[in-house]
Length: 297
Image (cartoon, rainbow, N blue to C red; front, side):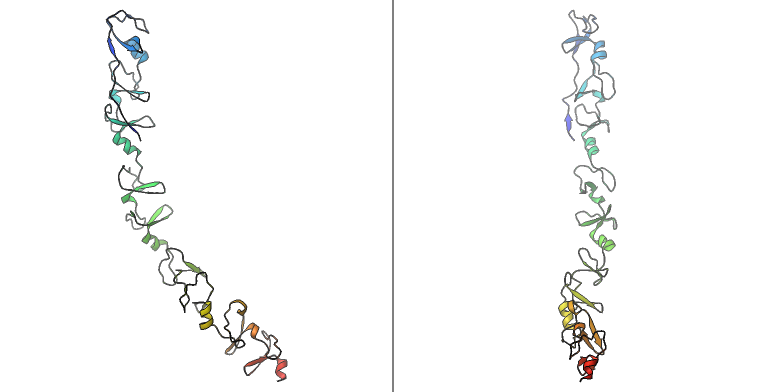
């Protein structure tokens, strides 16, 4: 907002005619009468007020010969009408602001009128006061509070949920998911496995504690293992090739018999190499045979 200051009100020069002149408009003899010199024209008081006088922007009445007039941007006022539209302070010799709607205001009221309103209490935010701005909205510093605990947020971190603002502790308590492992809130990132949330640092191999995010792993009895630890510590050993049966890649399917296990592709007749998966077989010592080969032993 721009503030202006008047040099003071002006009066039209009026005097008594001592020579023989007529009014420019009505042609009355002005000798011995008061007149106004308007743009080098001699005008009687009556014609001046009827035809030449400016109209006051406030009271809408003519500004007569004997009145003091103030002018701003082609608008005119009686000295007594040139007042603040809010507090009515006389502004003839004071700083003032001219609003777009034509209102004249003193410096104090003009600054208050242009001030933003607090989104919390809806009162004006006066220039120079402590305030917080967020997404083109403004709050008094003491009105910028957490929706949950009602404490001022000030310079602390906060999160928005729709139109509601939360300090970081309240946001975690109200909205953050809790890690399935440590039960603490997950404030950022995290991993989801079978619809259960985990901190990245909690979703680790049971044996070597390596983080499993983005890595191949397997679960055994609700415990997670990386591939290497599962092979060495958990997986059954194939009675055929002696390698771990991991469930990864080619070793997905296996055959169990009594206390022994085989990769499906290792469960073959010792003599003719026929695959015996889902077929009848004969155990002889440590070896397995198809029925035909078993008869020839």
